[in-house]
Image (cartoon, rainbow, N blue to C red; front, top):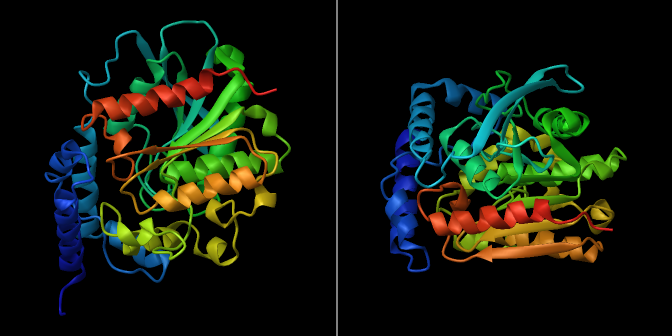
Length: 364
């Protein structure tokens, strides 16, 4: 009853790990991996973005960031995601409308042949992480090995810096993603990319941004820049738990906590949520907002609080007449595929499916 915020956070993480270890539905390899991860995933309920920014600068916040960075770095495994035959380049562009500089990390087979391009947006709730983190370096290699270029746009985060030093709420990150897709398309010849086979993809917060980028391109009359969207475990509802989505109740506390998820709304775009802006929270979209989108794949994890909001969005796409497909990865927790050393076969299956979506001929 008299716990400090730090103790509450750790207790909640312990509860989550107990639930994860005891649930027979979850792949035992995931239970083993996350049983060793001691970083807490939930903290206090924030009322303002300023509270969250202050927490990030506190000793506890910095310790959490350091612990997570170390764990994510350990996932860059050459044995699981080999670099043989691949090249990595870092480019930079000027984002609009703020004129800020954003880096793009491009992983591709060593060839000058124009390749389909996966414009990939990293997870982290639009608040944290970077495409330069170990787990995303490995994930890019796993996808690129299937014959595509993976251009990871290191957009501005809302709380913890990526390679971009500024931390700003919505729409900063989305603007960087939309600008990045347009820049990559404009530079396709120089970068040896096939401009007819661009897709936008991402996991968790990146899944949000992938959907929002597609919607924003459509709104801007630039729908033709991409031929598809691939959203993994998208973080899109804007409020948790939600009785419309049973998974948000059943799996609350397993890897993700409602308190942490709702803090993400405060960090990224509370005003946008209250204004029901689907560009910030695609789960608020109506069928009319989605008409005219290119084909979409929504990939969800069985034991993820966000599972059902992703499935609902898939059904909304169908209602809007969008060509859509939904895949469910059994035995997995939120974003399990990105942790490539845990279940390499599962990660490989999703990487193959994602690359295959980019390799498909454009819809006519």
